[in-house]
Image 1 (tube, rainbow, N blue to C red):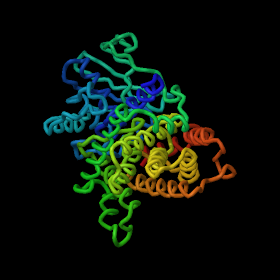
Image 2 (image 1 turned 60 degrees about the vertical axis):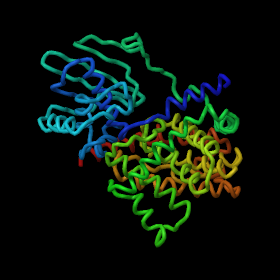
Image 3 (image 1 turned 45 degrees about the vertical axis):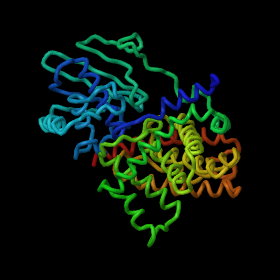
Image 4 (image 1 turned 60 degrees about the horizontal axis):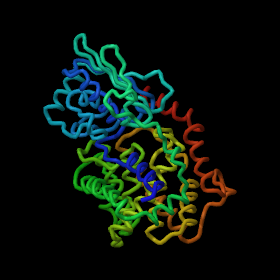
Length: 426
């Protein structure tokens, strides 16, 4: 393995990891768990301060193992039974007894949620108290990036070795990826060095099957699959839409199975991988080809997301489905130019789909993203591409991606604030 290959694989491990539950409330649970571990005693009170985007994405989403939604129950569970060593799977050991204790804490108004005074888009501070004892944890920029802890007024910054494990400040953009390098890496890297990515299939396919078998959320995936003959058609597009949406149905409604996330989002991890996985199932693709396609799809999504930031007003499924579209093109023998055409087709199509919080309805957006991904892939494989005279598309693929990033991270700031205000005032 070359040094550069090692760097890219490091980025994959950083951004593609298991996550149990929607990652915004899970970030709150993680911070609560870490603070409670410092307190080393049962927390009597939990005070949560979050950025607007964390609040937006935590208001309406199901919390694993409960029949409740929101940040309050997530914070209570993190304080009662969370284990910070599990990272984004912080609640995986919860029991029915833990759930009842957490519900009681919430019912007795022992958990408070407030907006933090911060310019950070991703910010969580959880303070836990018991009599005269107090501890806190701060998470910034990444859902599992603990940057500060404290106990009874004394700050312990992890960069100074509080627990011997300092967070990295290296961002996605610091890796200086390009679509061309991603494509080259996908084709040339040794299979043994990337077959770990098949964990996408293990986790997200299990979620999809659970979504089809159970009764979750709006049942978008189940509706598509059960109406495949009369309405949607028994083809690859309906298969991919149904399976991807089913995984999102289960996850957003509080299923206790983890997703393999991408860029801090389980839904993005599902959307970036399930269309590629369903193609492999339908057309009997071997594991190595599937692994390479998943590497490409994940890296394309990570690369684009680097210009947007972890949270924005732009729906993450736009980026994730762009990645899966590229993976499908790769599986059909597509060239680098066709990969670029696919990205341009996607950006020229569904840019502007807004994120109005994490919720069961996200499965509908996921299904729409998958449909657009397959359309874009088919057009690219036929030599068709949105041209540079259209909208925000540029002749250069990297400039096109940067244009999308500027719209999502800067141009839609007012939109994001308006969405948050509407949601909070309902």
